[in-house]
Image (cartoon, rainbow, N blue to C red):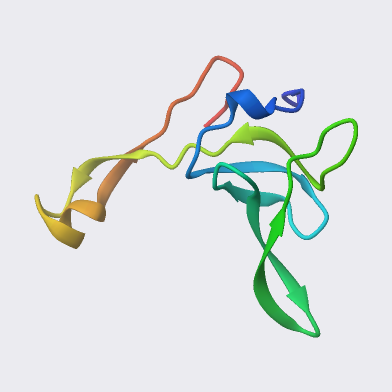
Length: 99
């Protein structure tokens, strides 16, 4: 059974977080506090495009869910890239999410 979501309002968006949604150029965007950065294409070349938050009046990106980037549970080390990569990563899940 699918999880059914409503669009996220602009005041609930968190800066520097990724969202899944519906956009003119792509369906995953990074909210920079003013617009979404999405990967689009132009003449067979990939590039970053900006899309404004969709409202009833205007905009081209409609966010539905923040992407959980996870937290490192068991890293390879304690500092630098060794702390960034690892063996186990954890994600928040609610009773609607199946892992």
